[in-house]
Length: 89
Length: 361
Image (cartoon, rainbow over all chains, first blue to last red; front, side, top):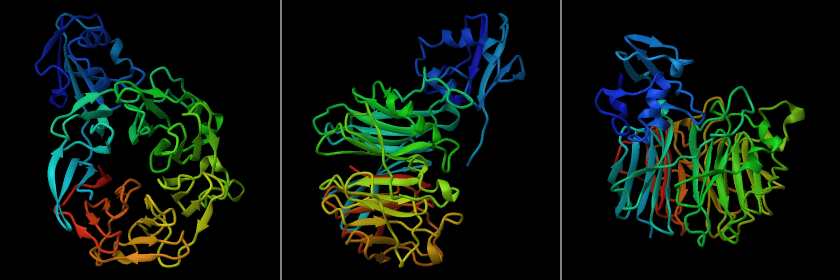
């Protein structure tokens, strides 16, 4: 199973440690977390299930475009990081 | 006398308590570091609601059952299942207005959002329904953003005589009312004019930028609007607006409050118009009329009068239900309270982040 790590900014609503997630794609793996983290979805996705504009997805060390990121195929050994772009003051 | 006020700011929610005359101090902080766009105190059951604008992670809604000691995230209004009417399907950007339903409508809440949807909850915010008839009105598609990329509903005025009668204000989307809890809508706004549109479009009611709409509790057919290019008053519902042209201060601003028992008395936080947006001469003032806009008092006692550049946003001014105590919060973190109808003001003991909304309750 791929391992997903989340920005600590999401520690109130998501896993606080790297978590193994079942799913052939990133979208499936994130959905697999929903039963344990019901609020997480609203932080990652907008009202139509699109990744929010300032969410950054890294798979195996490479930042992936948000467009199509949920359909990315994950390998058993994939390391996924979910971060956010920083802005403001 | 009102002794609790809240300031929703860019860096959290601040509860103030009145310790003695003119002395308001921070009693509690919540959501420190997170932008809070709106606060609602529900007098029917004591619940508090706080709307958060988490930027990267979206707009959220929290409820407290214990006066703000603890908060639980509840459902936020959602545009899931709402089709696109522009380039892409709408998604919640900001909870801009929160109001309670009528006194007998336990659990009923209203929310105005960016983009310009009005939502109703019948269960204390556990779930929300988009008011489809307004969203699907073809005139709503003419709305455009003012200060934000998308338009939004910032004012929701429930008629105390009948909670099925609502009036709303949108930027830039004019003023509307319903008599059947949102099933049908009437576009008001006759008498308003928009300087920011071509002359032939200036009186189009669906694109008036009513920065803030307020309704007198004791005389609910009487309304005031602080508009992008002036002040308007109506006395028979949301049409037949009369423009007020003050000579003592700029007519630009965002906020207005009306005395709950006297529809002729209202307060404003004026600023130099509209491409500049700072207090005239660097002096923070409040303008008050007691005669329906025929004349104004420009109130300064206790407010900064030297090199002060505080701007007051549309929800930055509030009045308590008795009509004596006012609170005013600014973009540079000023918070002032008046316990005598605006004659004198005292600064709260805090240097706050930029203030988005102040509310008693």
